[in-house]
Image (tube, rainbow, N blue to C red; front, side, top):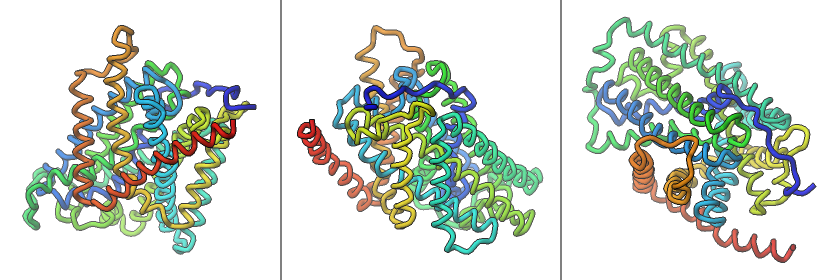
Length: 442
């Protein structure tokens, strides 16, 4: 059976399934660790909470744009599809080259290793078990997704509930420790000076922690009533994430204080330890392990759909473009992505890959949102099932924010940014070599 005659995806995901994908794709390990970095670059609890709220609103602007794009093109592949239609095959290939072949498996490898770290800490295993457990987790997730998107969604829904339970536990502990001392939570921190411009720098880790909302668009071909479900799920999912992030940071401030949060290497564990001792730290380690495991499931499922779409287009091996007739899952794409992520886990090389693809990831967001202007112009006389409000203000706001993040990242890490651009440009000769090879094979 060829890619052209392979079965299509079935629309099996409802609103809760889709919203759980948004929540699980955004909430990984970041909120349990990056709050300390944000605290280091702010001067008060009020400023810190404002940053998390502002970051959420900026991300919401991008989410609403993705909602319109997904409603216009409810197909598997997400940004790859938008770039292919608006700008042509080369930009779409460069996205797939950078994201599906490097960033997605690199993210899976990194977060699977984080899962294994916390899992070993929770049950007392030595660190030599980290890599085997991370590889085993990836293998298990790929195996579940072999049975189709609904099987993966059931697992994802479970782990989304578990991670929300862990967040609720942190919030309750923070409120108990606060004991009504709201003024102390929001008070200025006089223990360290914050240099000028640090506030803007603090927005970077906030935005990075809000990343991952695009995975639902990768799975849009399997969402029921996508024109209605996608906008609703994206809005509900990101709204829930913003509330969780603000409440968790309030809990950190209530339990640790601004200075204590800035000095903490593991704020979630330190917060739980204050009330429950080492048993509390071990309990939250289980919650973080569940959170990271759920993220891996979504990244593998979303990345495999991009790979499958590339294979069906002839931009990758045709076998990867096939969809299994019984499960309606891209089994070969899942196997390829999972195997490559396991190689990265065992080699330990995923950290540098992620550093090198950060700029590429944010560029894909900028160009992905930019396709909305093309769709609005190209199909201006056709009704759209959903339209982003305040157009063109919100798309411009998000694109400008993303470009600002890229500039700030380049200034902060010029070497990594340069390597990121080099990896993207390396895809140009690969694209033309691939096309030439295809013509010879034909």
